[in-house]
Every structure is written in C-alpha cells, then in structure tokens.
Length: 124
Image (tube, rainbow, N blue to C red; front, side):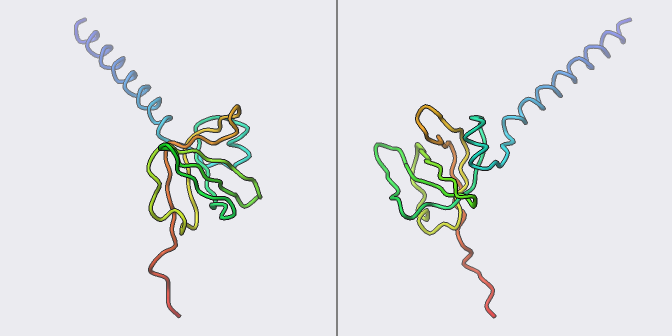
C-alpha cells in the first residue's frame, strides 16, 4: 500500500512539473507576426521591419521612439524604454518584441534586436 502511495505521489509531481514547463515555455516562445496581426491581436509578439529613414529616431527621457516599415507598407510606431543600440541607423532590419497599445497607437517594445549587414560579404 505504501508503494502505491509513493508511485501516485511521483506521478502527480511529474504531471505538475510537466504542466508548469509547458506553461513556462508559452511565455518564452514569441511568434513572428505581421504588423497588421500585431495591431489586431494586442498580444506579446515579435515583428520585423526596416527603420523608416524619413522620420527621425528620437531618444528622450530614457525612451527610444522610432518607426518601422514592413514589406506590405504598414508603418508601426515603436516605443522602447532602454538604451539605443549603437548601430541602429545602419541596420538592415529591426526585430522588436512587445505588444501594440491601441489607446496610444504605439508598439511598446521590451526587446530590440538589430540585424546589420554582414561585414563579411562574398567578393566575386
């Protein structure tokens, strides 16, 4: 009888650990979505685009404010609290993680990844 109770406790504990792991992974995995999907969903997502060079990148009071364009022509206003990456102006693409705030008409980013052109291009 004691062995059965130990086995049941181990199974319950294992199931709890498995469920917690699945729940934790959901917060780690952030899908890539289009700008349109990011605006419609309001969920925590990541989007990729190019900096709109026609509009200035502003850095004021600890906030970085800039605009991204995607391939479909959508414009996304991005606000990021943190330090501006050094090579942001030279970036081919920018990946931002966060969520769209409809009331403020901004994408509030909590992470920025700058994708720069490779220094090691193939010479022909």
